[in-house]
Image (tube, rainbow, N blue to C red):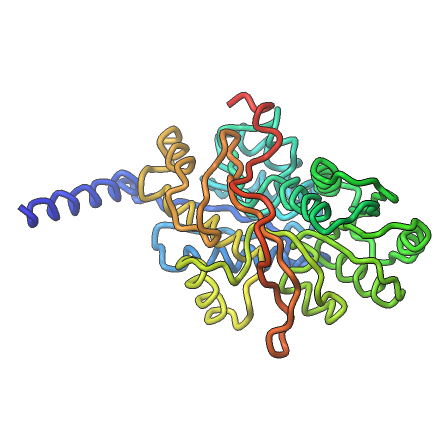
Length: 379
């Protein structure tokens, strides 16, 4: 009887495989991400995490292009991938303004888009789409947890700042949604700004008891270095984007002790995460970042869907993606009805392990957290 059951299971797996690739078609992924200029470290980490996840698959072909953090370039690349490369799935975009330029047109043309990073509110609410899945978070999420942490830390008068683009606006909206105190100041900086002397002077004069900032990539590096040099001793809180692995290496000990919020951390105690951290270090010779974990999970989600359905059967493939039947580096993971994650958001602290600055989890900021835009999505 056991042999018969095993034979039936084997035949089932073979049939599933033949349904996916009966025509000899490899699933083709178009990855558009930032690989040069400001913010390139984020795109490189997403790319490396994704490629690690699909490394052993013979049924996936990946076309990778550099968007240079320019919306017009991203649109041109998406058009080329859809029209000429005939990709089945798009992924990779880091920046929300680029996502807004690319995603709506891509999904309306019958392509799946799996976001490993950007999660603008406009694509979570009324602009949601059945072919769009965000594997990272909705933009507000980590900042909502930061607002909650600021309450727990006893902060009453916080100065907040972020870049003037969709993710920056979502960041401050998310923080204010959960923070119960007053605002000593609120500033939107230029995207890509490197000099924060004016903003730091405003913080100094504001009588704030704390600072919350969202400045991803090189922006956060510049701000933290200048903030430390200013001698201001007001505590700062931020999302993981400003205190992630690559950022910490550049910022240095000025970041020690800072609390930041994240849905992932290298010390999460689950089997999938331990394997990911070890495999990433072995493959690339560095510790993985938040972005690398998101790229990796995106690859694993894609492969899990391929095991259940052919991308040519869009309805079945969509349901396979929606089931999120994969072992996430974050542990428990599922999609809300608007295709954004339901997951825990943690509070981390920047520490030193030997000579390396890194993060450790100190508490759970938000448990099984979804997003504020589910009711606005008509799916």
